[in-house]
Amino acid sequence: MDDYTEARRRAAQNAALLVCLKQQPACPRENKCAADDRSSPLSLQREMQLLDDFAFISSLEDNPNEVTAVCLEVNRNGEGLTFRIAANTGCLSHVVKGLQVVADIMMQASKHGMR
Figure 1 (tube, one colour):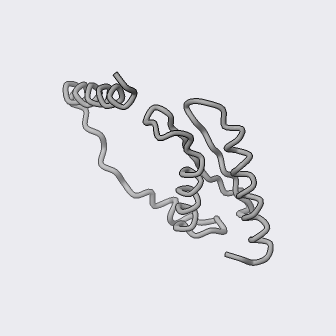
Figure 2: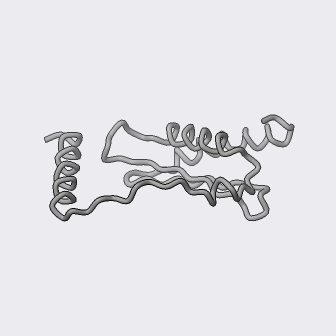
């Protein structure tokens, strides 16, 4: 059985188990704190676009069992950003090096007032 079929089988089993346990996930809610407390130098739309782009760049394989995630932290003074990357498999050193090049270019652009 290939990885994709195995992942689908496990997802179906988990869904069936949830039905048996009669657990229903809570309805999604908007996080109003994140929208109201904006100390970031970037707009929310720009942050989301950067994270989408970094997640796409950092994805190693087109495999549902190999997942990469990216998050963005805004420094407390609002003057700096930290991108964090995580994966459930493999070594990310080459991905981190590539993203560092992109981050350096972004830093240079921000120093010159480009947005």
